[in-house]
Length: 113
Image (cartoon, rainbow, N blue to C red):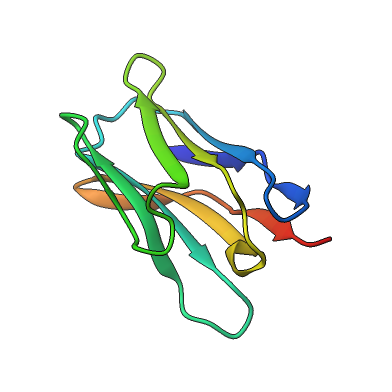
């Protein structure tokens, strides 16, 4: 099973980006899928999660600005990011849990003018 994150890039403060995470290989049912991020010199932090029944949770720093969603049929994950701030700059990773935890390779988000 492989997770492939995409959609990162350079955006100005206040802008928007949508990250996507596609899965390939053996189809697994993920009980929970998450987005993490890691900024240089900082620990990896949980940004948002979504469980199989659609319940979501967000870090306080992104509440009201980010929206996590998943496509069950495609077994994929998305993160809509609005009102981006410089402090959102980080490498973003998708994660899926199905017994084991599976990680995507990361996609860089840079918020800068």
